[in-house]
Image 1 (cartoon, rainbow, N blue to C red):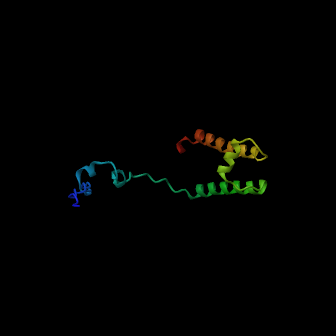
Image 2: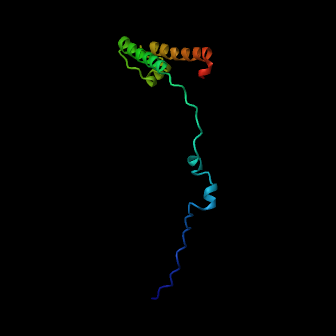
Image 3: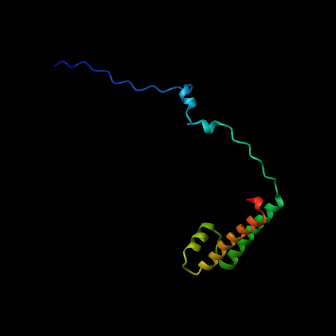
Length: 113
């Protein structure tokens, strides 16, 4: 038996080149290609940075020496939200000290925020 003539497959749409006008007006890659805004650099304060690092290191060392625990903020914060176990009290104090320090600094040094 004779086969019927084949019909051509429908043609697929062609890709547009990058130079096509509609591509340039689309927001796709445009934000990534624009230059970043200039940010003002903060002044370098090595003594304040060293003091802050020493405070963090000292607090972590005290926690390890006094409680035998390593400072991990996610564990401390989750432990302060769940009131169970003997560790709840010191975790609550730790979180409270963070909140107190933040509150005092926002009142005494509002330019930092």
